[in-house]
Length: 115
Image (tube, rainbow, N blue to C red; front, side):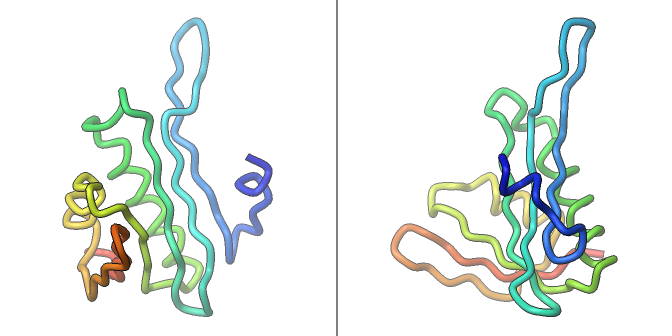
């Protein structure tokens, strides 16, 4: 949590999705990026199991990609386990895949934001 809270709002940024009801407010998703160089960044995204398939990940990814582009980042990298079908589906909605490399059971996917 400390690493995520220590962002510089330029080369590193994190967004948290929360659900609030009368009793409490709780985090349900997190998206973050870290600069790899002056024009590309690595993204991370996690959504609680019970909130998957409710477009939380898509909304977080869309907002994070816009924020990254506003700060000069236009190429993105995601690392995902080969069995993570959800991230590949999400990337079809928010991005244009440039390349995909497999390293064991992990895919490295490079993409641009879909306009």
